[in-house]
Image (cartoon, rainbow, N blue to C red; front, side, top):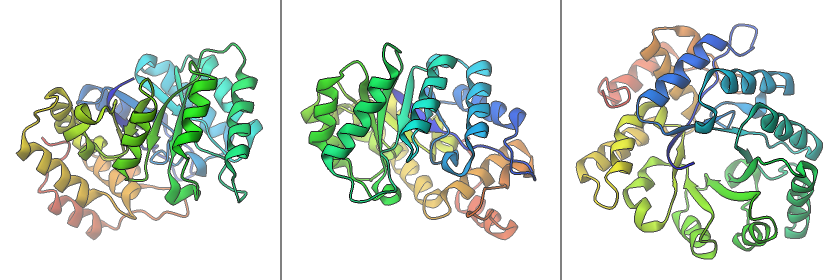
Length: 293
């Protein structure tokens, strides 16, 4: 996979269960409006606030209702066995890529321990073809996956460990992975990185805010090494408005506005939905722009 990948949100009802029709409508809309692919059940999708059955349900909806070659899915949990089960199920459904967090609960997480954990996942998958992208999100996990660890795993199992999403915001870290692993696909978590992505050797971005900025981000990606400066500046401005502690609630509020369905505003605890006034302030700050249109 490469290009603009939207980390899609997951709509929920009053029973906190995912809503199929809203989910699939937005996913298809994102694919039709600039996004090359989707990350299902990542952080934006509130994956780690759902139980395993709900995750499997959403995985099935996406695999059955969308183009599977444009999907990746989050399967990482602190439990090795649960991660194995979710990743095997993703492979059964036809997903080509699983995005896997490190085991983030017990500390300290040594390099030896992390290598052992990821290799145990690889060994359990045996001859299955699903690829693993590392998911580096130290602000959430407390673990910054070392570059040399990534290199070692990619060398041990090059057909399994093939990419990484980095949500640290550290582009130098991303560049160091590219320098150390010329075949690994590296995706920063912000579409602002697309401005220099071709020069930096990035494979694109995997971003929550491309649910809103996808059309513009696609233009920047298509422009290669010479994207329009004004377009890059507008993407950065809109991302600056949307991102922050209320990122998921913000994205869901904006999707609710596009669809005209307030159910999209609901988030799982411990998050809280945007108030009506906060949602209006957000829309005003974006000057009414939803996905740059």
